[in-house]
Image (cartoon, rainbow, N blue to C red; front, side):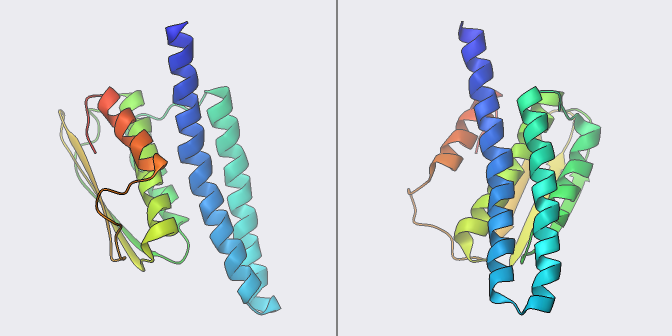
Length: 174
């Protein structure tokens, strides 16, 4: 029973991280389209439609639990994620090796970066975002920085608490 509950919690966290990110991105695109003239909005709505397709695919993957990325897929998955971030100049730098990660750690790394991007989009009022992955066979450090306003010290939302708990469960830290 504990194993089933743990799996449900993991899937709920995956849904929160994956779906929440895409819904935030979609919401920003639709808000932008609402403020644009009709000709310009057509392209923005096209981008929003693409995000919907990605969102549906991600939902299918999480719900069916067939999507398990490994270290080789991690870089490509993060590059794809970064390429779809709206209204934010984003730079990704990967240093060192990522091949020492197992599938669970690779998936958690992707979801962690996704949650960080979502938080920047929702709360930071930033124009630039830097993501650095620095890894070797024993440790991966992911650093996400932005040029936004930050947040009140000690005040963190549910997304960061979920992220902290997931990282702790794998021996990591936030």
